[in-house]
Length: 304
Image 1: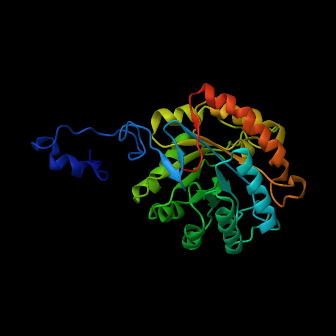
Image 2 (image 1 turned 135 degrees about the vertical axis):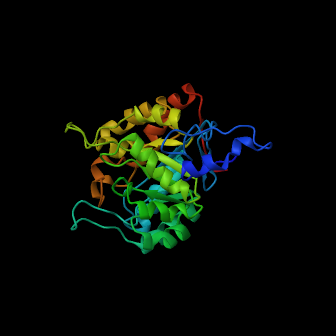
């Protein structure tokens, strides 16, 4: 099976269907070619440091919104690992709404993330916000994360597309599902097809929650593309008490993973403390969602 992308008029002029070694030529009608189900029928299974997402596997990605210190991240990571979490997240570069908010520790944060990963035994993912940081993030983390604000930063998408490490691509605050798929196509078109899509809520007229978690997107994406789909109910609701039920709903909707913000002391968190779970609440969440994982026939994925 060979996929050809480019000017369709050129492809038509080559008359591939007349070659004896070609069984058939099937046009892909969707604008997103390489991530479409038309291009690949079976589910893609993406591995982050040995943890599989997709194909019946379910991963739990958890950690603080921002890396604040070695002690904070280590304590949180140990609790996550003991409760069954499978991938550690932590932000070293933080694009904040206010320029006066904590912006992250930068490369020093990446080094802390890498050290804790090796000591605790959890693979890692962290957000990248600038092309100039691609090399550093690639060196210290197991996966890139493209945040909602950068979903349509096409130069950044192309930059991570030139690397081989997995990319978690978050849906933009006001992006349609097709917008998300086209952004994934930017990454895939550069050669990196290790892409995981993330629904993290969109902005609507509703003000009761930080965002509106669009769980319609999960089965829709699963039907139209072959990439794994995860959900971030922490950003999707912005309300600590709603994270657990929406995490369970995400699993029930068919998500291949969930991303949960967890902090050893949320009341002292420098970023997103109101939506972060403490370690006891994270343990309760893991016990609760395990029932839904069994019902949908998925396997809770641990590092191999």
